[in-house]
Amino acid sequence: MPNSHVLLRVVGTSAVLLEVGAPEEVAGWSAVVAALVSRGVVPEPVEVVPGARTLLLDGVDPAAWRRELALVESPALLVVPADGEVIELSVVYDGSDLAEVARVWGTTEQGVINRHTATTFTVAFCGFAPGFAYLTGLSGVVPRRSTPRASLPAGSVALAGPYCGVYPRASPGGWQLIGRTDAELFDPDRDPAALLPPGTRVRFVARPDLTPRAAAPRARPLTAGGRAFTVVRPGALTTVQDGGRIGLASLGVPRGGPLDVGAAALANRLVGNDGLAALLETTMDGVALRAGTALTVAVTGAMADLQVGGRAVSPGVAVDVPAGAVLDVGPAVTCVRSYVAVAGGLAVARVLGSRCRDTLSGLGTPVLAVGDVLPVGPVVAAPPPVWFSLPALGGPVCLRLTPGPRTDWFGAAGLAALLSGAYELSPSSNRIGARLTGPAVPRRRGELDSEGMVLGAVQVPPDGSPVVLFNDHPTTGGYPVIGVVARADLDRLAQARPGTPVRFVLNGSGSS
Image (cartoon, rainbow, N blue to C red; front, side, top):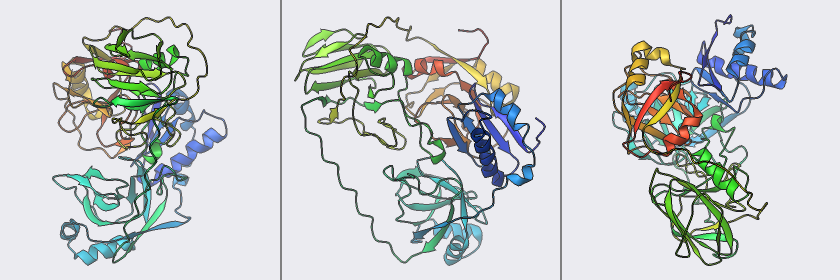
């Protein structure tokens, strides 16, 4: 494209990645995107996600954005000046890695504190977890720990590479811990939820001590009975899912939602719900629920033995559950995930506009436990007649791949290795991603600065084992993406059992 200051990389079939000339230009290109949208030149992207040197536009027509961005002139004006309010965070500098950082910088622990408190930071981008901000501006870099910690407490202030970050919640991490703050980095009940969105300026102030943060009051449990289900047997991993959280990826909030979109939408249609209404997603061993009043349900996805009040019923149809009766969805006979929809939809509380559970960030209704009460909304319409054919499930999974945005990091040999490799689904797969075992995919470049990630992206970590990102994936990541899987193929992958053969073909190659 004529503008040499930005490189447009296509990401799958509905996203683009703008690679800019310098990190400080990312905010400027964000402003360009906003201006093009406000003038009606192009539709608004579903997500705009800043990275270290990139800007991801997800949910767009790549050809349209290529045409419009080629016309942008005066890239020197794209550096947005830092102005506005500076947020101050109080810190107790007692981190267990403070001495190591002092050693790396050739100074004393007080010298580290002085440098840190004298710096005005800017939030370059968010990722890893909701509200986790990557702060730039610090002179000097710090290597990550050779062995990450299993958990860092909420409020941990840490350094890695050129960045400073504050952990919004207890999380594993390999950053060097220098202190702690009592600031609430992310609060879904606050507007805005993230204290430090991209572009925010931040300063740290040393304090001798901090008052422990008061624990949030516990919500009163709902009373069993009425228009609700009570959990009798929760299963290993049963979560509430709906259409997900859209438009919050720039704050580090994953999309969530059902992994098998087709099965979930079908279950909702069978009981007369909107296709995105809240329902249950089970994993492997099902769930059992007691109805507080007469309810109508449908179960789709993985085939399982179904019973209502001890009597066998059929999957894939609307079924009445009398008041007091137990709906028992047995272990999956085929595949992995079953979907349980109830007429009226589950009416659990919304968090940031969605009722879904995000297993990465912990947002939404917790994973089900015995005794949980799930309120059910009012019936909107009677279950309509639905004609459908179940897709063939089980057996090898073929994934159609659109190369990019970082195929050049692997070269022809790397892409060929992925396309010819015989892979299997790893037991360590989860709602964050499908991990594959098999031939390593070689790459010819080192580490990547963090950049926005899309659903279906195939990341390749240093060990060469591909990972296909699912709904709860972090919104940014530092592993290069060799290609993006067609979204229509992700349902099949989400239902594959560990050990299932998986292979990749080029999208549009005609292979099946």
